[in-house]
Length: 181
Figure 1: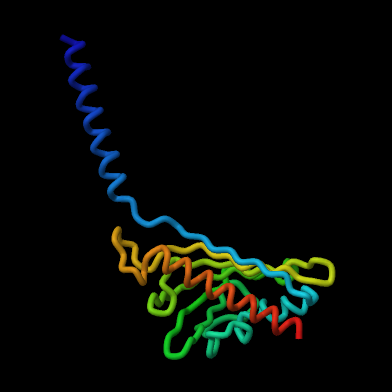
Figure 2: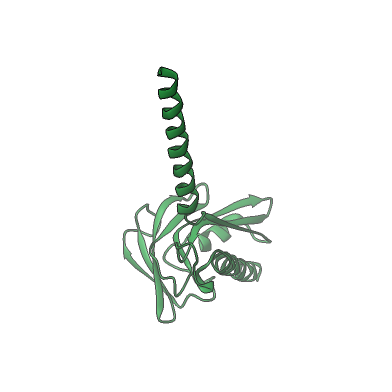
């Protein structure tokens, strides 16, 4: 009799575990996406950092029309800026600023999927000396613009990766041109 109870209990537990796995698989949302772009610039690292590390200016990033500091100092954790591209904007906040290590980490705190088809965006810009040259690494982690299982084409994984990768490539090429002239 006791063995029948264990068989029944075991069968019920296996059935419940199977349901749990089935619901978990179907409930899985989007995966975190990553982009990294790297460029070597024929200019000293301190010169490149002076431009890249200026949180209150994105003069090197072609689509940006203006940057407005809304709180804090542009070299301090917690500082916020609004980045304007035409009549669209995103709000960003410094998470870490390391002038000696020539590294800036920031995140978007106010998404605008019409401008960038991403959410939960966090990024790092780093300048590394390489002799008399510089290596600039720009990387990010983010989710696509629509977290649902069947997002529209303009807010899916491909659109998010292409938008960020394209922006980074454009920005780094322009930075290189500015720094090498």
